[in-house]
Image (cartoon, rainbow, N blue to C red; front, side):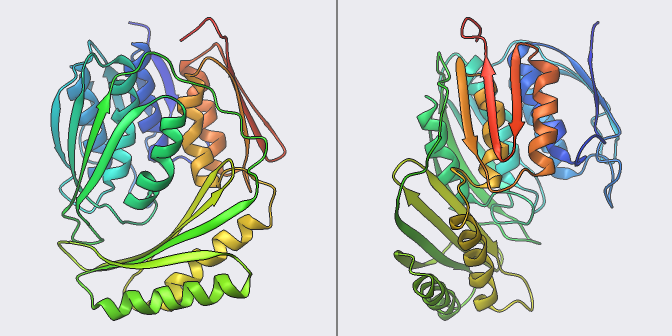
Length: 345
């Protein structure tokens, strides 16, 4: 069998290489073999959240697996027919539910035959992954602009180290992915913020809100900030900011941790947004990374600008091109262009 060979240590060398490979393998029907999985990380190989992504991808596509074990640095994946339906996945730790979701979302949307309902348990607000609010308020609206049909809800927040969170996601199959050209973001309308806590006093969230409002006012940024108490298994906090422009949405967030005052969490999120506002970018760097795969499946040309080109962006682009040889991805300055032959899908 002709396997696509992937070196998991290329570029930034993280789990995204594996997740993108799993998604595109199912969509294209091309088997792959990946070696050196997270080889340069402190805990190399497959960790619980990566294993959950692998097993969830295998389950929806009845795939053959070889090497799907904790700590494994090599994996073979041979997908078969995709099966829509109701699925229940549990990371078992505070591993990111968002990353598991993004692994199987595109295959179910593009190759699925009927509506799929996903229940994914684990971490919903953990480091090095998009928090639930980013998915709900930023990522999902962009997906809908590209023609995807999906809805999501948070049943329970899951913070590090206990996890125990749960998201519910419904996905309808679609026929065509639409391209997206964001040459200008337009004027800023308003920044909508959330200062949220789980298992902590509400006054902690209030302190976060007050600092956000103060910083944004100092920078003459129109804002509306609310306080939320999230149902959660453990304790944690998050500050989330969504900047709504005439033609785009930009999201930044920061997580609380032991010994980190809520004012510091608020300042971290605000500083990220303020830096973005001084750029000419049309999407934030995290969204840019996550737009490459779906736009590579769209018919026609897409383009957008990001504040900076991260290692994640370059690595994801390289992996996508390994599976889709009719796609052109170019990075010029801070602009990213994605184009696929209009006759292909």
